Figure 1 (cartoon, rainbow over the protein chains, first blue to last red):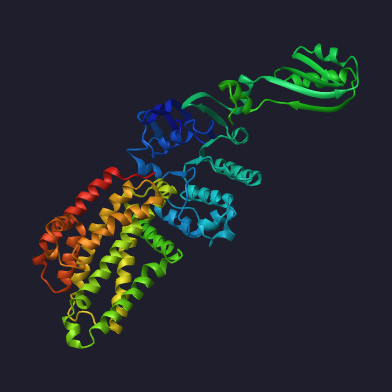
Figure 2: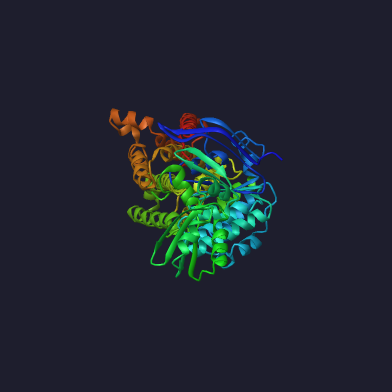
Length: 305
Length: 250
């Protein structure tokens, strides 16, 4: 099956600033694909090029086999879009917005009432856009992105500015979109969001893609280190831990041991060691690398900087 | 996509009328001012003969009111477009199968419909308080008004294309539009201007709109105003062509 989105060698400049440089990747049917990177890395520019809102200087883009510029309206009919920092008319009512959007598409629109129900906006049907909370606005934008039952859904910084609870609710919604067989393309600068939500991610910085893979593979490839922190009142423990093949270093402060090593089986090996040697443990936790660490490793700086 | 156009137009009308002062500012206030002005003028010409000879009440006031409504509609269009651009509303609407022109056309329709409603209410309500022209060619005047409005709206689109932010839209729009009133021959005949101002008047699109509307209201035949129509059409074509080149969506 050909990829749903194929981006090849795309470059976009604003004056002398190169926003996106030689970006290439493919998004497959039915996956949640995340473009991750810090603010200003080129995420939104890339996404808007794919949506046909921004014309790249170079390179080719194909979405559902269509050219986003020459076949813009044909494409718009089959995709759903949520834009970063977009607003609606201040005094448009929730149901009016959904009703208006439903009328703009040739394809059969979803049942608006049911969609609002799913997104928890039924109580807010008659509320003006300006009176909605941040989370409610985002849910409305998701509703507008889904109303035409699109094949591909684009979500740009969907949960930025939301509290953790609203964020989790939105993640569930996005997973729900994938379960209905849609392809989701999203951008985020939140590594936790990417890790929990995305099947595959592309890391972008300074307009260039640094690496593309599943979150797990990225972590395994770039940050194979695993760490176990445990507390045990056993003078011989340190030597026992050092004898484990995967262990690289063991440090201890007041009976608390920090055991570092490489590979997924480090933790199992430590547990076996504890059990075989009858070492009593009063504290046990693991420190696992995440995408944040991958980003730090690949770029030399934290994504929040 | 006509369904989308009408739905968007209708929603924009509703959204506009929900603004504080929306309905009152667009319809109520002009009607009120019109009646007050008319009554003051009416008292100044107490007899029917004086009234009949008063060009101001018979022609000037209705045409002036129409022009002011058109200009405030254009100013409002400039402001709304720049607010929508700044808020990303234009961009969000573009990310749909709508034609970009349809989005802007909806705003033009909103202004045309609201202006027409305001004028209709104004003339109907005004009639109860004092007489306006007896043999006003309503259909022809409406057409003249439509031609003028569309032409001036196209000027508004050029302004809307170049205003940097929504904050500047209102003042810049006002500076571009309102001085035109003074030199358009609305309150004083252009023939009475010094030569420099007469030249200025000739390059202002509003001058032709005023001439056309006053003439048609007075019962002139269309053939007497072909020059005005040609000038307004030229303004429309030039401004529309310019807008399509320089209009920014974000």
